Image 1: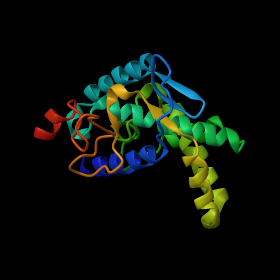
Image 2: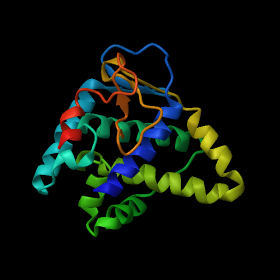
Image 3: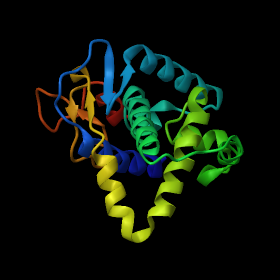
Length: 198
């Protein structure tokens, strides 16, 4: 699962770069652009994700970050991708979604590959839709348009509920956590400490 930890750290950098400090809406785990991720939705998706891990005999501690952060990161990524796709009027067909869901990825199993990416079965289709849409955008942009696409994606600001801590702007293998304790800069959140010891 080392490659998963590296992927998490890389993805966290993307979220960290788009995080801002605007006021948090009540009951929100995050606000991404003009979309709100409620704590109820986050909790529901975390439960579905943990259940899927258990069903596949996978240990959540292998993620290297708290499950809540892992799922929240994916939900925020998908929200930003959805909004970018809407701006660019990118359409994805059911056939393209079905094909993406059959992709075994590096784990040679579509379901395990999605779990490794932080995707619960409950939002697999939405994840596939945004993945295909972003791939279409990247292909259409070509090498010359990639920087502009990144800037546009980064312009979709993310604000996270301060109960998670502050966004970790320098994730590493030692501390891949999306958030760090707000009171002790650079220290992993208390949720992560037991996993680091394991």
